Image 1: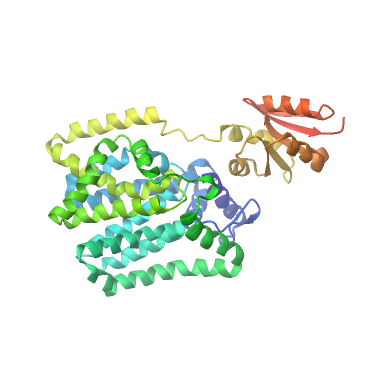
Image 2: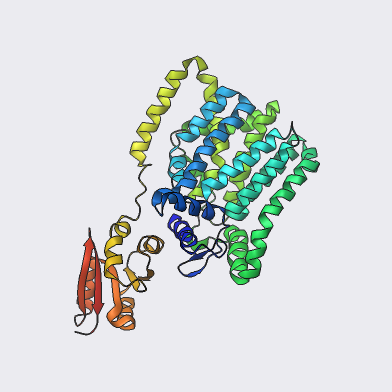
Length: 431
């Protein structure tokens, strides 16, 4: 996914067309534009690099840690907020996802900001306007996923008996601000890319993801229970007790802050569980609230006077699990990236490159600047050689090339270069 977003941003950077987003030569309306525009700006500053492609997500991840602290400070005190922020910062899944150039961590950052200002707006109504503004920003990051924000706010207001917040002038002014941010882009897309917009943005992301397991991404009803147990390391050992405790405390003591975090955790969790399409990163919006529940419980057993020992413990935990989980390793397209200079030097700029038994099209488009197609069988391989005659180029493993030579003994294959066990070959059926 991040290769797709990086390539869409690169096309904006190269073309200067900030409204007509494209990928693979076709209009791209899969996501709203704010993350794409942010990455394009970083391309202009740092060049078209992996660093620039991932920087917006990384900055939003850092911002999430800060907002988690601020909300925890207001709800439970500075020490609990600080420990909650550290729990988020040192959780394996969060670190990995914050370093991907995707839209999920930016979504959660603006979601956390919106809910933070919603909470503050209970005392200072004018801050509810900012809650709406950040809701609009979240929607322009990942469209309907931003609806976690009003879902959390409305459920909280109903359970806490604070529905007057939803009737306040400031709250609806914030909603109007969000609408003023959201509508122009969506109206533009609906009028310029009507079919694609209705099919991708509306039908696919609003209806189909909820009702069908798209692209094979299905799972059982306990998919996210298993995911949080596996991925919220190492703090799931505390979280598996803190989350149920927050439910108990919410309804026993009627503490509003605890109820707010409980509603945030479980409203989002139940929504993503009900959806048919399941991906592990859909769990990310739960993490700030879950981390604060962990921070609250840790603050009860770790006295603040042991500040430096606590920091040392967190650093030891981070160093250990980051090393063993390989959280800092993001080189997932090594063969594609490693062969980039070779492919660009040996193939025509307007040519087609085939990937045999190797599904890395988004990364290949980004690194190679070529058209890409998959081949998954010898029949497809032979058809492609006939179709492209002398202009057939394929990126293939050494073992698979041996199988193709056996399947097409009359074909001539010329090896243009190699990277590790992958070869760039030109081929023709004519001997």
